[in-house]
Amino acid sequence: MPTAEVAHETDFEGWRKAARAFRLAGVDPAAARFAVEGSSGAGSLFDPGPENPGPGVRGDAGGESGFTVPKAFVDVAQEVILHRSADRFDLMYRLLWRLRAEPDLMKVVSDRDVADAMERAKNVSRASHKMKAFVRFRAVQDEAGEAFVAWFEPAHRVLEKTAGFFVRRFTTMRWSILTPDGSCFWDGEALTFGPPASAADAPQDDEIEEFWKTYYASTFNPARLKVQTMQGEMPKRYWKNLPEASLIPKLIAASRARTEVMVASSPTEPNARLAKAIARSVRDGSYEEGFVASDLNELKHGVQACRRCPLYQDATQGVCGEGPRAARLMIVGEQPGDQEDLAGRPFVGPAGQVLDAALEEAGIDRAEVYVTNAVKHFKHEPRGKRRLHKTPTTNEVSACRWWLDQERRLVRPKVTLALGGTAALGVLNRKVAVTQERGQRLSLPDGSAAMITVHPSYLLRIPDAAARVRERATFIRDLKAVRELL
Ligand code: URA
Image 1 (tube, rainbow, N blue to C red):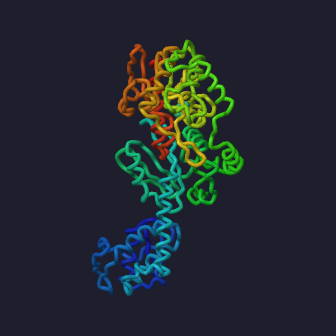
Image 2: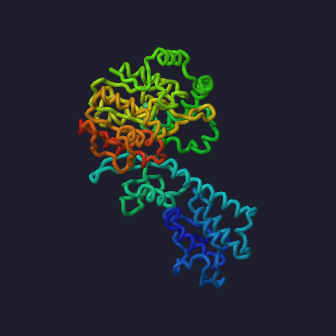
Image 3: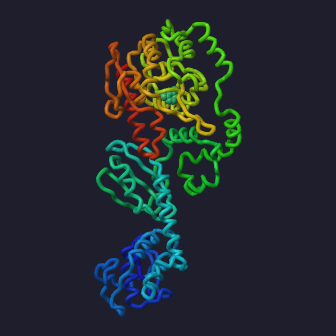
């Protein structure tokens, strides 16, 4: 049986030369055999000959005096060769052979071979898409500093096809992606490919995974759970290499109970007892527009009764800052979120978890920090049964500066750290480009220092694992700079 060898599983040029030679020699598809070098033991029967002329260009040898193929065929074949099926070379050659008598074959989508090729090409494209979504990098240190390594098992051989995406996305980082088919390395300048790897070659758990799991668990909405859709989007075969996947069975199991709780408790109604207490404190005169607190406790009551802007109307309660009266560091966020609004405490929800972990990593003890927000009431809009965060306006931030200034006057922090643009507006009383001014020592009118960094929710919203890792590292660097100022 005429056998042609290709150099490796995805050697399209090798296959093309061999297939062209087969067709020129009149080798029937039923008789043609393709093998990957080293796997058949057979020598190559076909001299590759001159460089392949490429699609649409006339060949020059054999009984057939030369031939052209439609671009549609080449496009599909380039994908099909990446499919893991063992008979893909045969299918591609069968199509090439049939194109001789049926030049428009690729347009006949009902044809079995064409449909088969299209389906395999679609599977390959899907595998590439999944690779873009599910590669999870882990941070490692080597002589040159920080690098990122990912272990991934693609459904088809899409490493080379997809590597360019990661180069474009993570150009400034050094990273490797290891797969059972091969590996690729980006050093910031050049992309190189290497031999197959095994899972053991990649680092295992790291703390970034914990961060990602925290995020996933806190954003997982049981009411939206459609197990089949979720498994379609995140097929089980990828689960074992996804840190968050270890949570999925538990989250699914708990989802019914959580959904019931969500349904029963939403849309969130202000707690009646609390509402009464607030109304009382407004009525009995403990609050007036120009209320000045003499201590943090009084301030808390003042915030509860605040009517300086309309945001109190839809919030459960005002959320005052908390922490030691003489804290040397004050951290200012934007406004309470859904969970903070219910709990009456700042930074206790998902953003708070990210903040806590980052503070710990930067060597800052949250118990020694006064944590507050630029705006004390939760601004949101209802979306079905959920309350979606809305960014406060400049006027709302200005109205609430009344309270922030009082907190600062009472606590007198040595350093104030603003998380994000709204917090910076509250602290500095001017609009700030966070990316330009972050991490710098700024001065406040009372002579103390201020610094700006991103808001932890921003980290939670970054979809790409490696970008998130990088941004989180910069966030921690900013926190360490704050610690130095202290
Ligand atoms: N985001 C904030 O800015 N503050 C909080 O307290 C919680 C989330």
